Image (cartoon, rainbow, N blue to C red; front, side):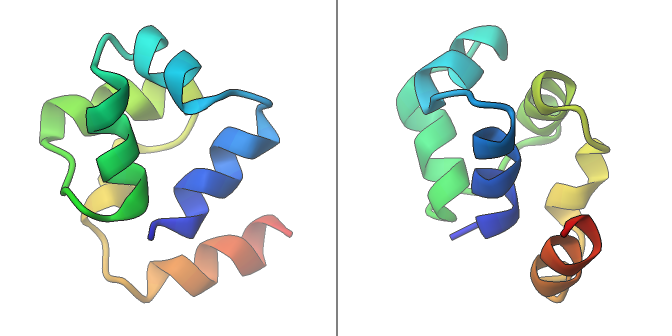
Length: 74
């Protein structure tokens, strides 16, 4: 699970459906990306990051980012 993505979405008060709609993708696709069941394509990473306001490259960083992201944004 990409906890940092869930945290960012929750912080903005958005549902998965709202993020998916704003990012012009299916909710199921967004859900699978958030749950870590599917990797985001560069295109989808850019769309999601634009909606949630972060750098899209975070999707392609090490898993170690998971703990760093939560710590640095707390």
